[in-house]
Image (cartoon, rainbow, N blue to C red):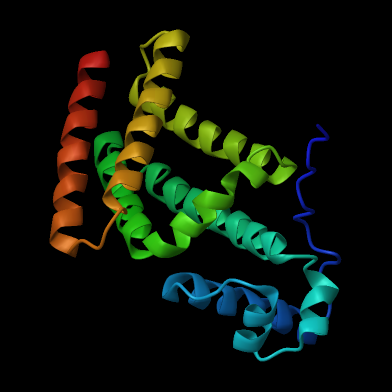
Length: 206
């Protein structure tokens, strides 16, 4: 049996002029609204919501998977920036930084839950792209650098395990919390409990 190839997920061309950048921005905003509203996610629906012609949409995006991929790469960048900002704030102690990062991450995951679930369904298409691999390396480095600072006397293998354990725990909890709408108070309570658990564990590791 012939294996089906994955559809192309990169832009046909990068927008260069202000008008074309506005068009791509309008398309992405329209796509997010459709995903959050649970509407039909088709190229025609995206173009209609964005107020552009289908032909103009196809000038930049070969298919709806490419629209999702652009959203996914921007979501990766935003999440990495959120984590890096919190964990690299050296005016605070490592445990306070980790606590702040967990709270911000959980809030972000829950605020954009419908959108993120749609992206997660398409993730197998994107995980092994150059962009996906680059983002994986970036997030791994951010956490590894933080753990090296938090556990200066631990062995390299212990640090590697700690970085993987912390990242996996936070990611899994974020996915679990975003499975339904939750009040902010409940989200923050989970964040505090997760932070208590992980900071306590890191202190024992240290």
